[in-house]
Length: 244
Ligand code: 6PG
Image 1 (cartoon, protein in one colour):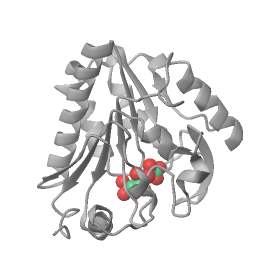
Image 2 (cartoon, helix red, strand yellow):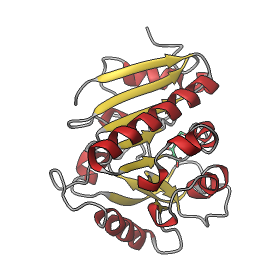
Image 3 (cartoon, protein in one colour):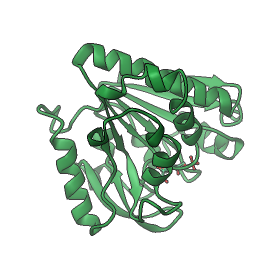
Image 4 (cartoon, protein in one colour):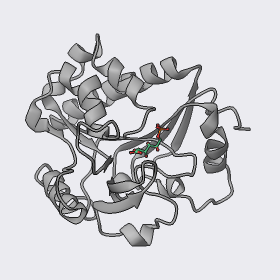
């Protein structure tokens, strides 16, 4: 891992702005270096302010959407129109307002059996990557959230590196809502060039302090250690309030 950075900003609005600026910067860097930007985002409530910002000026015009491929790190296997759908929420608040080619928006399939969905998504990712690193594709940027139980993506407590080894996408069940889900694996996330934990609010402060502390927690988020890439914790002051 090329180091861990912790950035604390004042409030959720600043967090969204900082995250959107980081998204833009990584997009410009990736397109300059390799002609495209392959990014995966999380669901949940925290990233929604960033998504809304990215759908407005200046980001709607400055992000190179025509060279961007957008994936999700996890999804609840519910219809896209359901309030619990990560893609459905992003589609309404973000995707519909930006000029990203439809074929470059890659929602996780939800109308099939979980196992088939995992296989389909693996193939969809594979089509985009001619070369792999250690058997995994290298995303340019992956945004993650943290649950107050230490989960990230839909990798819940009890998930281990062993259980997800060799896989890119897995069907799981759990979380809130407790439904069938699909999730990127630790190994796929850890291949990314840059992984960003986006965390807001005092409710997460205890878990943030635990995960950034020295003691091993064996919680899923602790297993996010990019092999070669950067790891950034982007926190608002409430989420960082228990850091020593
Ligand atoms: C999901 C998310 C999940 C989320 C955390 C934090 O689909 O549930 O991907 O991993 O990032 O649960 O959620 P909040 O941002 O709503 O606190």
